[in-house]
Image 1 (spheres, rainbow, N blue to C red):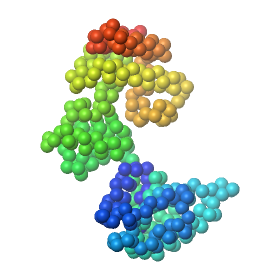
Image 2: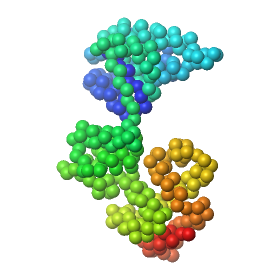
Image 3: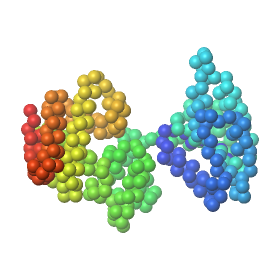
Length: 332
């Protein structure tokens, strides 16, 4: 059996491979080999594929990014190298002769082009070949929230309305992390459906989103809303110093985003430079427009003063935060 799993969605690819490996049971480790395509030779691949399984029903050979490497291999003329073409020609012929006791998985982290000869050969194998594309679901198109909801159903986890959308927005396209958060939330909620309140308690991303909302309220001079959000986060058990740290972090991001925007950088470039997901980057760009660079610098200095006042005991922490919110909402 030959599998070609390709695409940028690593979680799904690895989950499918784990399911295949699980069929080997206790003999999985002895009958599984993982090869790195970046340095793999024809001889090495054939040796491992032609080797019989040890006691088990089949031998699992996993090859990472071989086709990706061959596609990128260029000759002096800028075209695909002759060595790569020869390897592909050999592989298209060899996959139809692999022993039935071997399961080969070509695990590619990039989408394989439709014109790739191995992909074409796989499609001709009939039931002996499986090609599956794994692409990361997109937040903007609603695919990511749909994935969260589908994943929850597969795990027998019930979600209240809006929870899937919030998890998708807070975490972004890290599917492994979303899966982990679903497991954690399910343990916390027990037999009842997971609610937005559960997210606020259990997920740091939800608290960060509240910080975004509060800073947004401050930037738009909506003091009452900022105080309500501050009180909400306190009621959820957030420590005053944690809240201050998150506010400082957010305004530091705004300072950096403001600078990058002034240089003409686009959202994806800013997200990459700051190692942020595009969702919070877009929010930060919108918020940064509410301030001048001088205002942000002044605010940042005031935040550091508040931190010192709390840590040296000059001001009680909650009082210091309340005073800070009033001042930030009045920044001119």
